[in-house]
Amino acid sequence: MYSGRGERGLRRRIIAGNWKMNKTVDEAVTLIADLKGLVKDATDVEIVVSPPFTALGAVREALRGSNIELAAQNMHWENEGAFTGEVSPRMLRNLGCMYVILGHSERRTYFGETDEGVNKKVKSALLNGLLPIICVGETLKEREEGKTEEVVTRQTKAALDGIKTNEAERIVIAYEPVWAIGTGRTASADEANRVIRIIRSTVAEVFNSRIADEVRIQYGGSVKPGNARELFGQSDIDGALVGGASLNASDFAAIVKA
Ligand code: PGA
Image (cartoon, rainbow, N blue to C red; front, side, top):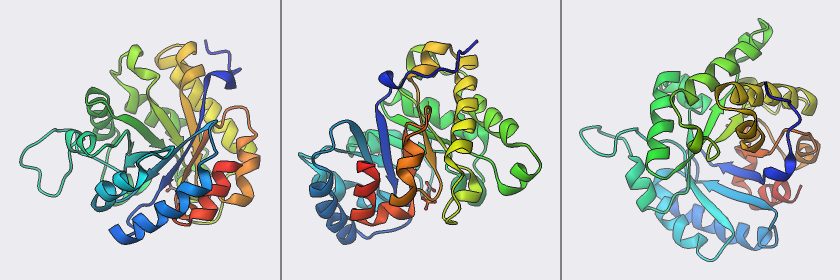
């Protein structure tokens, strides 16, 4: 059974900006130009930006020579075919993406993504050399009904189903309580850490405690410069998935520095 100690030494913090459906190509390039200079000295943290599909190519060019990695916000699990409106893992790799966000609550809520579909995407991402950032988190109703643990455990197990142990360390998980996303309400640092420890124990159950110690688990949901430091001071929070505050270069840079 997982000891629950968590050894920070094994886990490099990762701050990812999820731009969602924001920024034209021009706006995206301007944001990167501002951000690059602000975070160029941050070496002990991994920095990732996730622009909309339309801006990935231009952002890739704008990121050249920087310490910032590129992520996509979603993908299909197939590599090609008759799937109008979809984008494949192979296309994302070809565009220079290193990461892909999968199972974001907005995808689950507005676009009908299921645990099963998220699992297919995780498998396909790994197969295609993309590192998945898997989002899990409970809704307000589920929290009020005392189901937080049950929901995050179910989502985590489903997403990781059938993943080989030797691929597991490449996965990043983001704990994003749905009620904290874009609302200005953050889970308290203690509470976020508590749920993240539950997720880490689930990872230990699915794989083993070595993997659980290595897998990075971010917190997401109204992370701002003002609350980042407290969140990152927790034993098991390995960074953040940042929405709103990632659209502003100085706010995002302040979170990276925290
Ligand atoms: P937020 O979004 O920081 O705007 O709350 C987080 C997310 O949805 O990833």
